[in-house]
Length: 194
Length: 194
Figure 1 (cartoon, one colour):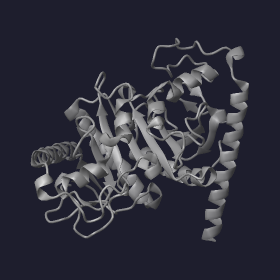
Figure 2 (cartoon, chains in turn purple, red; figure 1 turned 45 degrees about the horizontal axis):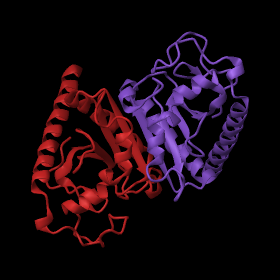
Figure 3 (cartoon, chains in turn purple, green; figure 1 turned 90 degrees about the horizontal axis):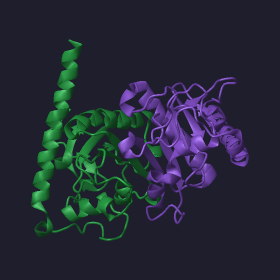
Figure 4 (cartoon, chains in turn brown, green; figure 1 turned 30 degrees about the vertical axis):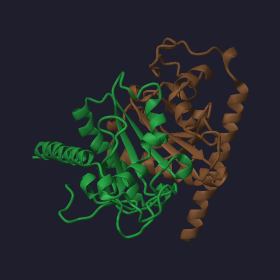
């Protein structure tokens, strides 16, 4: 299912509607502002809840079924040999946005993420999705608290002139592409069942 | 549910029955021979399947619902503030045993796993669960192929004198303790419902 026209999707405090490429009953998937490797995406519950333990059984099931459904399309598009699937469930585990998100990172033999690079990036500044969202100025204007590390006060989002429009356009193009490719896979499945 | 008496549980090619502390309809949880941090455990599907994409929807749901159920007990026992939840889904992502396994690693503020150490360990030799199982000599005697890195030929498991009995005893004690503590939490839930 595509993002519904007019529907606003929040990732923590951030309005990420333009980054969303897939929505299910309880979950959504979004492209990263700064992917660690090509095809690195996030899957979150639609409900803004910080921990896995806050989710209902249906939300847990839907989240990880969505991860595997998207893996299939990413595997085809990025010729992935493998995937890193990771949830930083709480700040002490490196979580930068207090909204459950599962990293899905396509891997190929010999990619630059080898020798543990992906994991170093994930916990380091490179993987700080909260910081990237703040820098992109996608924060909601409702004064919520989508941040944890105290770098910027709530409400103090990046100004318009600080936005990176090229990154935003590229990101939206990627989201549109992924949405279409997932729909192709779903259409293929529907045809198989006829 | 505890391990059924007489039931043999395999993790890849390894007989890990003595490490198992929880079994559900489709999944099981086992203690690590060499935990990266206290309380580091693994959750796997009972079916020996290498990739998430090999699992049925029921197996996926059950796997991650089992992860969250166990997190609850680990959080209490290890006073965890957070968790790293990670699946290395394929060799190019660091998978060392070709059987889906989800790492569940309790984290506390200021623990030695900070500054990305947990992730470095996870992909490095410290987190090579296949190697640890081989060194512990828990390989099945059926000549299967629970190895990927060519370090030891299939069937050439560690000899009895190479075993680390203290580690094994400690591991079994931990498995027994976790089994009892999970049963307490389940009993508590059952009483709540009365």
